[in-house]
Image (cartoon, rainbow, N blue to C red; front, top):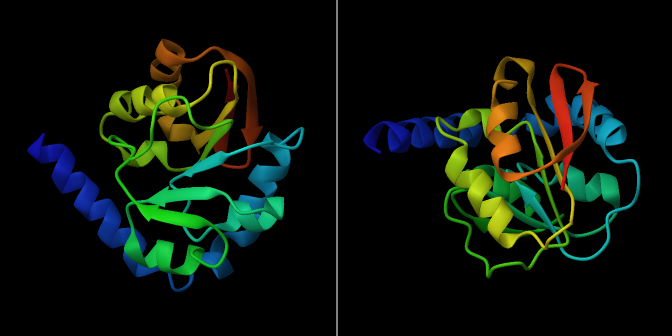
Length: 166
């Protein structure tokens, strides 16, 4: 537990440092991932897990609910999304509330994805999509994802591997 907390603090500090230039550096890369993974419009209440600066909300032209561990990232996202600083392992939402959950290139930052995936399963409405990408080096997470979800589609998107799950 202590090791997980130390890693989370390191990730938080890293993203707090990069928030000022994140959009300039990653906008094109992120939008490419979104275009590959988003086949159809998402409806209803959507959770952006590890929302960063809120680029997905801008891409979709709608406000999402975004959570991130980095205050500086959320400070940038607040004009684009409804934001909450939170830990993916302990989502501050009621059960079965979201019509979709999306997470782009954030799960590989966790030392153990199981608790976060369990939380996603808890807050996601049954049969609703969970769209997730992670760096190819984190593709071993696929087995963990399959513990909680059915993978409907797997896609290569740049340096990431993406999964559309239900």
